[in-house]
Image (tube, rainbow, N blue to C red):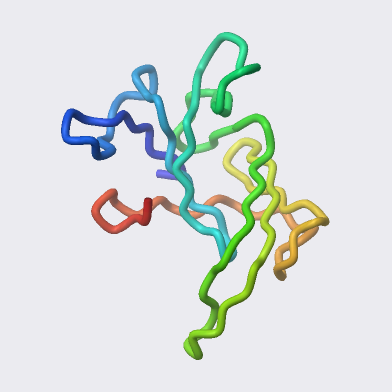
Length: 123
């Protein structure tokens, strides 16, 4: 699956759910920022909310607006850290890495990766 629909359970942890019940979505992008869990909505107006709109697809998801990620990220086996910028549009199951990305995928469009099971994915 390229996207896992989630809700927050009574224990405060994410649990899988049906797409129509999702309040969050987990995706896995190639590159240094990998797995992301985003607040989503499937209808209405997102203005004034922290949500991305999502089309409901788990195999070929489309999200709006773009996803901008900044921050420390470990790279390589040497433990060196970098502060990569990742900026992507998610369209029909593909990540379009914009030109302001500071990693090797800038300017490329790649398929989303399979999302690891919840117990293996990072928050």
